[in-house]
Image 1 (cartoon, one colour):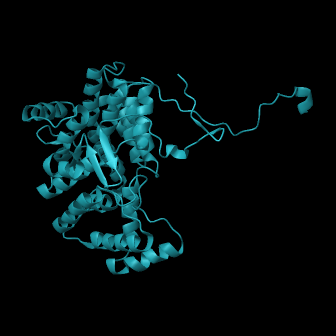
Image 2: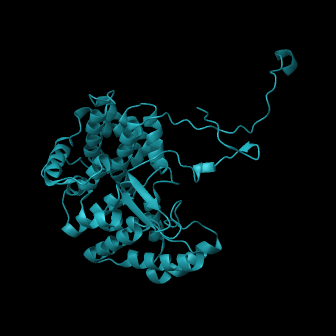
Image 3: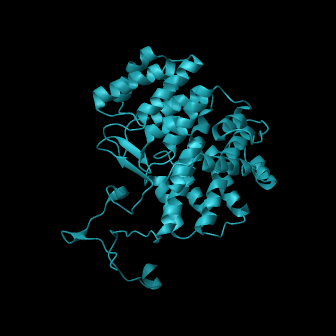
Length: 384
């Protein structure tokens, strides 16, 4: 088979950033920019947010269909049974520097889980699915424990009586909030779970294509998500909002940004040009959070920024724009926002690893050389 690309005017065409390149087939999710819509296994994501839970969506991404009642119960039981971290991993988390980046903490924790997992080297489909579930169950426990340790607090063990979202709040705060908060958080987890061949997912698939273990692929995804051009925008959005004194001053603040040609966080998307399909749903639940907490400042400020950006620049907000203030209103510290994203996206990454290995081919693109022509190495005597 010839792997050389088609030449255009005698020269192969290079797509920087792989823009517009289809690297493979996938049945997991579909982004439709022309209709600003996103589906998981064919289901519109906004409908999943209203009719399914995050755990059910995890099952859907891995298995292709929503679970039956019996499957849902068995999945929940297995997830809860696999939450506990080993004493060795807890010792590692305690040894982290207090100022360690939270993304470094979860990246290292997942890597350590790979060293401990009894099936690390087994890349059969059944073993990969068991490992995916263990990562899904343990990652939020590691995120919560590392976060509390960084604040000088003792970790709170997972509670097997609680569902996934409720348990995360329990481990971070020691309490479970009202159902409206849990629903808003659950919706954010569904919306962040999967988004086709984004940078971190493609990184995970690339690693999986080498037949490395699934933990290695997830670590690659976490590493890619740490980069500010991919993950972390929800954190940046909230830090930006904190700079604005009040909703009444938001327009003047934004116009100063325009004057200095400064970046405005939470706007624009590589795929969506007419608006991120996930934004209306997340905005609805961020506004619900503002109602529950009794603090509408952030959403009122956000509304001003969104209106001016659309009117003046023709740019729509992306998912991170409402997610940042939603998490802040839930009480999460800003450095925890992207690790929460990790806990959600683990479902998408591992679904893609499973799919990659069903019809695997090593991902190995070409580069078009543009350096100096071939030349001879001069003898030492000629180099002085």
